[in-house]
Length: 412
Ligand SMILES: [Zn+2]
Image (tube, rainbow, N blue to C red; front, side):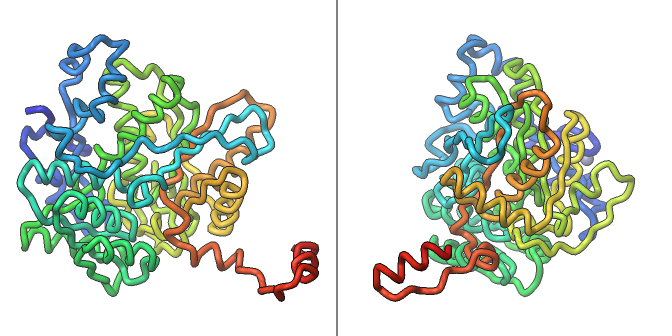
């Protein structure tokens, strides 16, 4: 077997083709608490290391789309869309501190315009190799539109359960990609639990974040790309927007794979950023008991009451000395505009949360040592135009006359 699973909570190993959660730990799960029993996918790192000269190992992995470190057998299973290999853009004017070199990983440039394509494409590829034709996901919007698009490209059917309040652009994407789109009159958490019940009843393959361990494996490819794009000089800090904690865990898992292979020598400081209006992961990290607060953030992609990968994300943060920051929604909106105006990268509110976290952190870095920083921008700003328009409304129209335009420009 190329891969196997290990429970994040009890450590038990499962040598099976596929499993959603550790049966022992998940038996006591309750809808009001983050699930236990989320699985890590592991590989024979000695075998992978021995298969190539260490100096070439990473290039070879990259050329094969990291295939030795993914739970699929054939590159062809991924389908024709190009996922990943997104730009790492240097942003000079974000802060007035020359000691900080800032790079933005622009994952809006994935096929469906979000980071979620990394997970969807892997789940879809595995399903293709196992003759599964219908995939389902609960989603705040991005995961669903991503799965719908990836399935459309890979001759598969998709069923998406999304809260009715999801941004219209994301819902429209799902429908245009041909997904059977179900609007749930409830929260994301309601849609999540509903999709699991339907999976058990109808036998679909479920892409729910963390519930399907391969979502973590797909998302880890961002770590490999950052390593390659910085020529191995990994950043000192990586800022990550957090909802369920799966992007955070995926990034850490990729970095951990590189540690296991002896390719990475030093773990960067990963900074988990949440909105104060949806801070159930950072607020409960390190606490003896989990207490959920209702999420009201305008950053819909990270609006989560019960973080589905809380335990793994929290364990990673503890093991590798990660940090946490929470920011105001208002700061998220202004961070989105600031990034867009000084870089040309227009990210949605969730991605802007990581930018806001970086800006808050940078205020305490004046006079400190130089640092390289990467910020994950996880989705396109065009996926949710209603939110920034609240703060940045369109200007009033002017008469079609040069004097009127000149007068307008004087006032704006
Ligand atoms: Zn377990």
